[in-house]
Length: 95
Image (cartoon, rainbow, N blue to C red):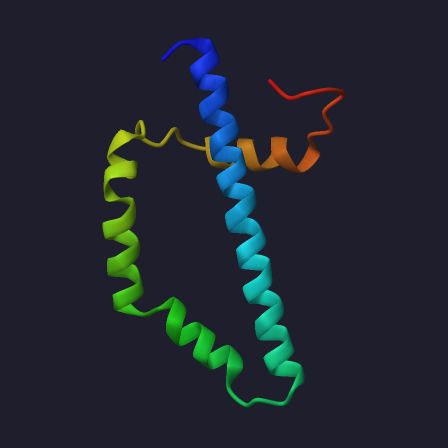
């Protein structure tokens, strides 16, 4: 993959992350609206869904090929990357 393809791929991934983030925020808002409407047990239902073996199996199946493409984890890089993103204020277009 040359540099131009890498940039295009990174842009694609960023677009996908933004799309998933937006969808997640919509679901969070939906849960808040349900709670505010007085529906009992919303958080418990959400926690049950999070811990569902069916959900975990579907997640594992969906991402198995993707995970196989990734290099092994690099120690504390996740923490470093989170700190970088939290404090990142780009002057122009990111690399």
